[in-house]
Image 1 (cartoon, rainbow, N blue to C red):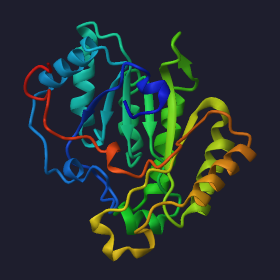
Image 2: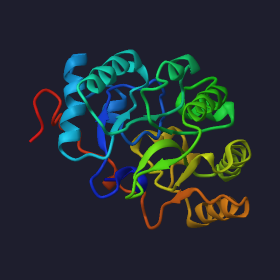
Image 3: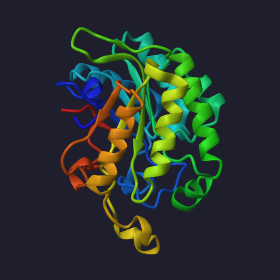
Length: 263
């Protein structure tokens, strides 16, 4: 229920979390799965079944979270689910640290892209996420996503059927970088995409070696970013209100629904 309103709606988004990550963000909120500490091996056939089970439960979409390293298997599972008549959209929830060829391989299979644009400064991508080349990779990946989904489509309940929503998580002391990112996205894509500006950055126990980001984002920092977006004329934009930097955004990874049908 915690995704953007046009994705979660009232029925919720059918999230499937994949274990492991090709980035090493020191501030990761989902460390249990991103570090590969939780998960079960399943077949492509079982993955396809999970998609169909989520549709039966009333999910608005199939939300593939950090599946970047499993794209060949995901592609096959989507094809199988479509052959069995699944109707709801497929959504790739990604860090954008992707080879553009991998994104191209999903053309016609993914309906909604939910990419992050974390950094535009190479040195920050390396220091905080062990991700050399991230800015160039993210730009190329997002450009391909918009090529595949060049317009925004919604159903009668304003649930997204097709499109791109680019997320940016504001980090402490990185307001200027955030403004550069949203200006780039605004100038390049205009109203063909949605932006999602997040203030839920949550410090964790791993940040002792990174004191400069070992704090929450201030209200001033976030309000300044939102005002900047407004001044750019951005209309397609989600923002967060209240104190979102808390544990409630972190799901409990109890392996429910992986090996057997969900209740």
